[in-house]
Length: 148
Image (cartoon, rainbow, N blue to C red; front, side, top):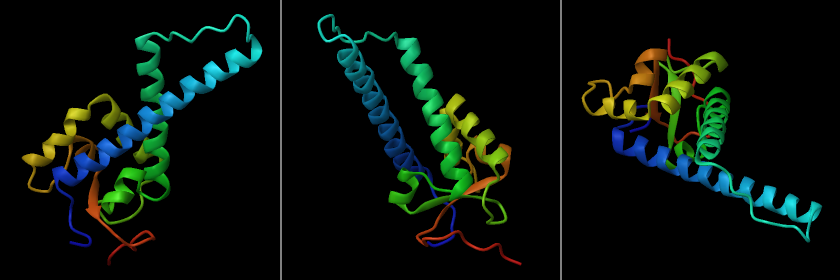
């Protein structure tokens, strides 16, 4: 399986782990803001009541930054590390920062595009097709070298 393109189930599970991590980060930010409010005004403390739009916007920004940094540095996020997956260019090289940013923007804006893997012969999502990337099984701790 090493080096072969990952299927939709592996990719979906990795993405679900990453999404749970972002939700946990949002909860952490909420409690940090509440704690700061308590420390600044303990007698008048009330729990923050953020709007749903603010939470969604912050979640999208966190997800965008998280995915871009992970894919540009090692090709992995926490979820992909757990499942033994890596995002690489079609030649097996690391994604550049620009490609990683574009891929993460497509994934965040159009998450249903992941399911294109089901009908694609190459197990490619819409984001993979747009930036010429692949998600492969890779249990090696370092980046694979590009083939000849």
